[in-house]
Every structure is written in structure tokens, then in C-alpha cells.
Amino acid sequence: DSGVTQTPKHLITATGQRVTLRCSPRSGDLSVYWYQQSLDQGLQFLIHYYNGEERAKGNILERFSAQQFPDLHSELNLSSLELGDSALYFCASSSGLAGTDTQYFGPGTRLTVL
Amino acid sequence: GENVEQHPSTLSVQEGDSAVIKCTYSDSASNYFPWYKQELGKGPQLIIDIRSNVGEKKDQRIAVTLNKTAKHFSLHITETQPEDSAVYFCAASDGTNAGKSTFGDGTTLTVKP
View 1 (cartoon, helix red, strand yellow):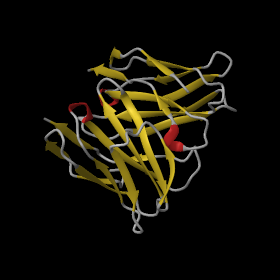
View 2: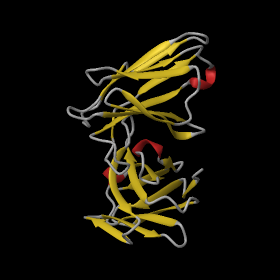
View 3: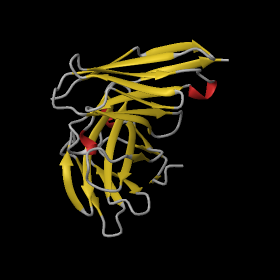
């Protein structure tokens, strides 16, 4: 158990809908990262938050947004969902900002868009 | 941007044999190379990493080697066990942001008892 929790585990929804994925980092970790893992694109970095502030963006679509709250949990919002958004979404946490900090991954949320 | 290629995509070995997974990267600015193991239904877990000022690092049955000149690095697992069966990912980053690593496509390792 990495200490990172994600809810829900599974999510099935329809095209055009909006969903929110939730992540609680390990106790004491200030950084939260979001990743998308799909069969054809591997593991793709979406966005990084540190202590409530956005620090880096990867290949995140404009339909997706995220935030980190004062209690350090984070939410990833996906809107106007398309079939191609079906994937596993992972969050990871680390203690600080260093590029070499160990990232601890949660168990993921499997999103299926029908 | 960085491009990481990982080979092979699948690897099957007998218990007790060694397994080697290789990755190449394109960006000479990359200086941090972690390896992750992902078991079924779980998130990736860091198993070993190496920085560019080191050529080799070992942790029990796992070792990683890095050749900066050739821009490739490899994961070596000795005395494989069935519990080593998983998907293994390599990654490369310039060390400025842990999230901005570029991942390889993964290798599915199967260790047959």
C-alpha cells in the first residue's frame, strides 16, 4: 500500500458527461501529480500541483482541469467526455519539488466512457 | 521533447533465469532514470533509479546500468521469481520536475515456475 488513495475505483459514464476524480496524497506529501494510462499511449503526465499551486503541465486537454485543496487532496475534473478519454487515471504524490523525489502512485481510477 | 523507447514489449523467462529490459532516450539533458514495476490492478511502484553521474546501481537482485554516451539504460533482474511477473516501465527526466518524466511503453515480464 503506497499510502495514496484514489476514489472512485471504477467510473462508467456517457459521452458528453463530466466526472471528478479524487486523490489523497500520502501524509506529509505536498506534491500531487496526475497521469493518464491508456493502452495506445502508455503513461502520460497531465499536471503537477505543489502545496495548492500548479507547478507543471503536461499533455492535459483543455477539457480537463485540476486543483489541490488546502488539505492537500486533489481533484481532476474531466468534462465533455469522449470515447478516447477511457483510460486509467493515476495520481502520485511526493514530499517536495525535486525532480528526483520518489513518486508514490495510487491504485488508479478506471474511467470507461460509453 | 524527450522520446523513450523500451524493449522488449514482452519477456518470458524460467524461474531462476535473468531478465534484461533495455531503454534508449533521445534528450541529452535527461539525467534521472527511474524504473517502475506495475502489478495487475495496482499503480506503478518505483523499484530502482539511477542518476547520470553513476554508471551502475544495484539493489539485491535488481541492477540498473546507464551509458550516457549511447543514451541507453537497462534493468537487470537476476534469479527471477514468479512474483517478479509484472509490467516494468523505464522513464527519463531532466530532474527539474518529477512529473515531467517521459515513460517507455512498458515490458510485460512473465516468470514461469
